[in-house]
Length: 103
Image (tube, rainbow, N blue to C red; front, top):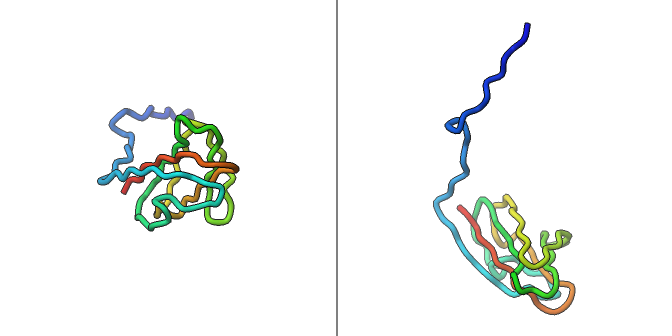
């Protein structure tokens, strides 16, 4: 017996929606620091972008290690409950980090 699978329709799709969008920007330096300058801010997801005019990459991770490398304009989406748990740094100099947090 062959079972025919029904294709999902547009109405079957779930779309993530949130009530609040927070926006921030900060300067990343060679020592790691949490987003929102380390101030806790509850959220469901954070979008991190390396500034478009950055001359060096930004490294993203947690308080212990920042292993994801974002070149100028690159973006990462992180499901997390607090903006300040996302840490950023550079290897030399300074770079701009932009972020959105949704809750």
